[in-house]
Image (cartoon, rainbow, N blue to C red; front, top):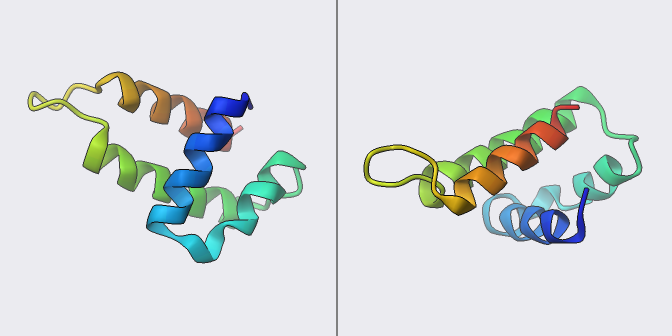
Length: 75
């Protein structure tokens, strides 16, 4: 995960589920379980629905970054 992606992920988790911030460290150290991955993916998806789509429901630039984050989380 690139530094910019980690920064975005930390901001998203702080906004939508600050109680889950420790899951980011677990993700980075590859010690996260499937439940933790699901939680992070859901938080990123929430941000995507709020900030990541255009009026025609296509992803905007930020939305594409969020999609990449979801892919990283689900590896």
